[in-house]
Each structure stands twice: as structure tokens, then as C-alpha cells.
Image (cartoon, rainbow, N blue to C red):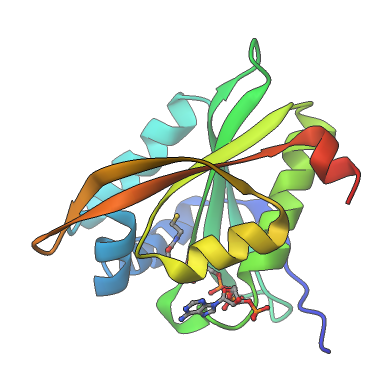
Length: 170
Ligand SMILES: CC(C)(COP(=O)(O)OP(=O)(O)OC[C@H]1O[C@@H](n2cnc3c(N)ncnc32)[C@H](O)[C@@H]1OP(=O)(O)O)[C@@H](O)C(=O)NCCC(=O)NCCS
């Protein structure tokens, strides 16, 4: 089995053009729930995340190519929790980058930021994301019925969580 290696590095100004393309891909819009964004809206979106104190990183493959971004957001130190989000470039989905990128970010969350819990929400139709999160160790803590609307249908949303103890013991 080939091990896929990724590096997480700072998300730079010059990555915004890539992000603009990744966010505007049709699957991203239906799975992550965004309407198309202009370049300027994308830039402001990144700026807003930084202002909120989100940890925003680029995912780089072994060829030093940016293949996606990953972030910890809603960081609340008083509760020791944050939520995690990931988006890969359309051409790099299904290549196995998601798992090592998530694992590295989770390590940062638990071993550097001293978080106690990392959580996320995902749509019930996003089977690939759910499978990935379960493989990593996230468990479904709640199912929000018909919580998201996309292309004429309502979909359940899953709330999934991973505790530091569970991660350290794997
Ligand atoms: C979701 C995402 C991060 C997954 O990363 P990825 O590198 O593409 O994931 P992989 O292809 O390695 O698949 C992970 C697991 O999901 C499962 N899987 C893959 N394709 C699948 C599919 N079409 N349907 C169901 N399960 C699938 C497999 O179990 C796979 O594990 P395996 O390769 O060990 O068998 C990435 O596809 C992505 O950025 N998608 C668009 C944005 C998004 O959905 N973000 C998450 C929002 S919550």
C-alpha cells in the first residue's frame, strides 16, 4: 500500500486564486453549500477567517503543489474545542490526500493547541466525507433532520466529533 504524504503550510495570498477555483467547482457548491463566489469575495472570506482566529493552512503534496485547504475554526479555548473543515481541489479528490491532511491537522489541534475535542458537520449525501471521517475515528453524535437544502432537496446533516483521548489512544 502506498503511503501518501502531505505537508500543511501557511495559506498564502497567492493561494487565493486556487481557492477561488476550488470553491466554485459544482461539487463543492453542492456538498459544502456555497453559492459561486467572486475572487474578491473569496479573498474577503479568507480574511474574515483569519480575523476570527481560525487556523487556515494549505495542503501541499509531495510535488509541492497546493491540493487543497484545511482549517480549524470556531476555536473556543474555554471549552477546548474547535471544528475542522477541508476542501480539496476537484482534480485531487479521491487520490487519498484527505486522510493524511486531516490527521496532520488533528495532531496540531490536539498536540499543539491543546484542544479536547474536534468536531464537524457534514451533509448526509456526502458519503465520501462521512466514510473518511469515520475511518479517522470521528463518531456521529447527532443527525439533524433535513437541515441542509441543495438543488431542490433537503438533506440531513451529521454532527461528528472526536475526543483527544480517543485520538491519542489510536
Ligand atoms: C471529502 C474529501 C476531503 C475526502 O478526501 P479524499 O482524499 O477525496 O478522500 P478519499 O478519496 O481518500 O476517500 C476517503 C474514503 O471515502 C470512501 N470513498 C471514496 N470515494 C467514495 C465515494 N464516491 N462514495 C462513498 N465513499 C467513498 C472510501 O472509504 C475512502 O477510503 P479508502 O480510499 O481508504 O477506501 C474530498 O473529497 C473533498 O475535498 N471533497 C469536496 C469538499 C468536501 O466535501 N469537503 C468536506 C465537507 S464536510
